[in-house]
Image 1 (cartoon, helix red, strand yellow):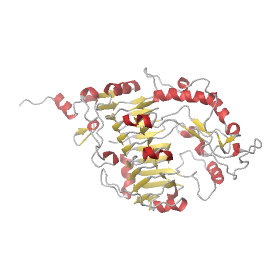
Image 2: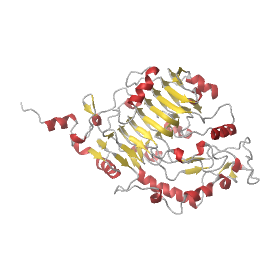
Image 3: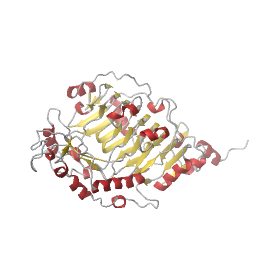
Image 4: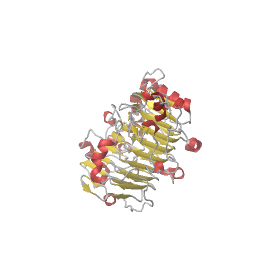
Length: 504
């Protein structure tokens, strides 16, 4: 019998890859990385059909890409057929087809100017007149109109919808996707697009950095309230020192996540790293004077790392490293989305590493969410003290300035959420279990085996000591474990060694 050629063997082992020399070297169970599907029982994404991504791609639908244009062209060429996208080097999504990076001046629509925008909507100007007891949240005027037009221009460039049946795999240890937002599902109105939402996507071994919004919007009514602990705060305007402009509240809101699972289903994100890159939010502090200079009022240019919303379902996020970021994992975007989200948003987070993160690890509404064997490390120096009022905490936060993201909340139990937490480890400088689980409108929460600052801790009891009481009756019990669950004593070392891009 004639011995098979070396080339034929290479093609066969790689599932008929177009060029073996360009494929990842890592192989597990005899399959190269790009041909691997999600293992059975590995979290919610393995339920039902499971996730194969583009593992069955034919040779013409295997692409090695190094630019935004090549990535978009590959998506368009393959459509919803199984496809493998091999990311080589760094892909900047905020570039034109020639590779030229686009920045604020390229996206800005006249007469937008950030300084003029801030002057027009400063609380001292905009908040002096209330509507139904609150500053008007829908801003009007030429600066807001120009900002919205600028947002539209940037969004068209940096947001890219990933088609169904796709594997996006980083080559080597330095694959990156930066300055943009991959969308798994759809963009736009959920009622119009849910039927065509992306399904069956794998993303592995990629670092995501700096999904930067050049045009964040100021919402003067976000968290605003008449709080008479604040000097001069009252509903009726009297003068520059007394009136609604002296009341606390208002937040900046940004537009882009690194990955938005927006209505998508059957998604596996594994061994990825997420950060703000070289433009962390600490470079953009609050711009308005007291009482609008609390740390949460920084100019927010980054939104989530991975947000899972609008009826998304069956997602596993594993062995990923989230670092130097504030709002990280949102599951369920609004309390009003019950008709869309109830019975969905089933998500597993396991063996993830949260380092210098502020909040949402994850923050959950509606979903059955399993969080296990993850490691959380942060600093709660400027976090709120539940024994103090809002004004006192505001002064305390200003006094206790920190260069890092403030660890405010890891597991956020929101409306109709059902979080099941197991064997997680939390190391929180200047903080404790009171900032691990926070009741954000939820009624139930379950945890077992978790450790805070080296000590076994009842996370439910700690949450109930400072918030509205919850019960452990979440109504479900996880059965989908990719591997045997580790004891908490082994989690820190194992996760730090194995989580993140470049560690497959």
